[in-house]
Image (cartoon, rainbow, N blue to C red):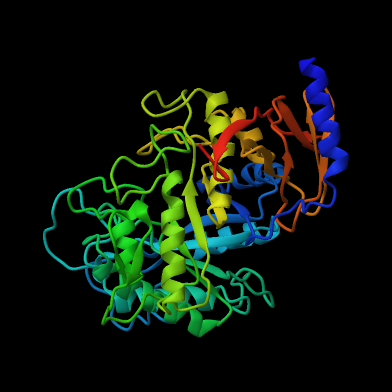
Length: 470
């Protein structure tokens, strides 16, 4: 009887709701990858081959200011920091990174961080402070941003090939996690905003169609000199909170300084030792479940004319779900991590996030929190690799069942079936590969999505509240 009820429900869902829109009207949803191997000549080809399997069109890479500019306590005499052709610059390694990305058909998101010694305040500094982010000179950072944007504007001569030009970079990110003193000190909006605004003006002056992303904020205040990400963002946006952040009540704060200039705001909502539906323990930190608070702040700022562009999107420029092995402290068993990764992606999409960058492809042998890779260090696949290839989340709420996911090939239908093979729906996907629909009734069967020969992990429907996973 139970199987008959499920079969009837699924058949009715497949043929009785065809008039319902299958793809929700929301901002785009791009899946990107952050993987250092693409910047290593001996590993890049293999990394891009695995990235191909995920249908990922965008890759985040780091452009080190310190490694590209002249070293030393003082800039060399006669050095023109705004001229990318100045002989004292060292662009060779990053030129190769840009060429490889273009050959692989990938768009780059370039994060520019790490100041040379001569662009920082001299003298002794406190322990555990960023070695390349101590009282950074904003004017010098803007000069480097201008030189980099000019070199990679698509018209700069390629030094290796006569008559050729270096590929263009369009998306630029100003620094990384400036609310942590391990990246920037002081880790305050007062220090960061001149860096961001100068960077924005410099990159836009080269090409007004360039796109500037504010630095991704770390999810938690991890030390006394660090800043809570929501407080940092509120000050950036000139907002005043009316009660706890989770109440989502904000108003314009009457800032007298120039507003922050960016085309997208960014957060890194790693949810350590939590499920996707759990809030961070301290109000002001940001786990996946807290991202709607930041999205609300951004919309209030936009309506209050406190953003530089209309309706700037919210991006996630670093994210992962950690596995055990290798991480015995905060990792989940691999299959559970995969299910939580799919739920987290749904939650981020539901909150209005339009780009999620997964970090990393391969498990790093070191690092602060290892285990976020989609592949183990030896290259073997984790279940999270399949979870990102076709994420499928199924939730039940208010007498309806919600289906959400993403296929690796955009505008190509995805078929959803029960594990017994019964068809639920063949759903169209949008320009980013996303599908979303709901049906009346509570589906209870375990389900699987496929696009061609590529299959998702199976997903068991979960109870959710108010359209968001619980």
